[in-house]
Length: 240
Ligand SMILES: Nc1ncnc2c1ncn2[C@@H]1O[C@H](COP(=O)(O)OP(=O)(O)OP(=O)(O)O)[C@@H](O)[C@H]1O
Ligand SMILES: Nc1nc2c(ncn2[C@@H]2O[C@H](COP(=O)(O)O)[C@@H](O)[C@H]2O)c(=O)[nH]1
Image 1: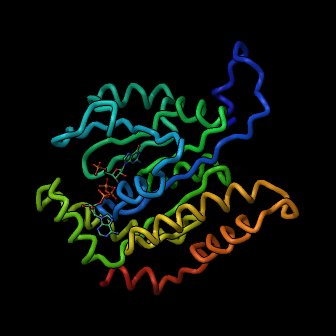
Image 2: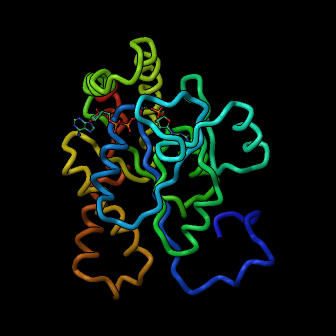
């Protein structure tokens, strides 16, 4: 059970299905979290959490698909009712992860993926501890991050600057998350995400039951463990 408050005496007893993994990808706006997620999860039956937000829909975005678009009042009402696993403000808008669908998916054995900004990811980490697998997605440089945000052409120049200012602080927090994947080469980054997912599933088994693939994934995941990152590495990204 994710959270004690979700228990319901009328619900059926828990089955023997092993719980899904809860994987949270976080990182600066424009680093490519969404693009990477689509490549990494292609063909997988994973539950992707649709967030609530108070920001205006962009052209082509559909209510209930990219986000549930709500008014500030609706958002605050849900927050007051403890309806979010986490929620945060980001450059003038609220964003939050509804809790119920996540608990349901994990209980039926489905892996769950959240794609959220850094403050919310830290809330998930504090609330769930080791149950949450946190992956920070790192840009190759701040210059490349600016290029991606500008190239996506969804924000005004002023909003791009605000997102970049926030990105500097976010990148400096990268060492607090379990894994750090650099999204320079999309294909390689997607392979690293698959290795993390495979390794975390293997970690639930006794080592003597590991297959050669489990060992290989575990070694690949160790290479992107955050302990391999120095503060000099982080400064290099924000200054480049
Ligand atoms: N490895 C990559 N190399 C080059 N461009 C990339 C790479 N990954 C993503 N991009 C591009 O960067 C831009 C931003 O990507 P994306 O929208 O996926 O970022 P995001 O982190 O999900 O942003 P937000 O947090 O604002 O939702 C897109 O135009 C995308 O095509
Ligand atoms: N803390 C949360 N952050 C979220 C959530 N859903 C999305 N996000 C992140 O917000 C920023 C801005 O998103 P955009 O769609 O306006 O570009 C980005 O980093 C998203 O990943 C959430 O539920 N909680």
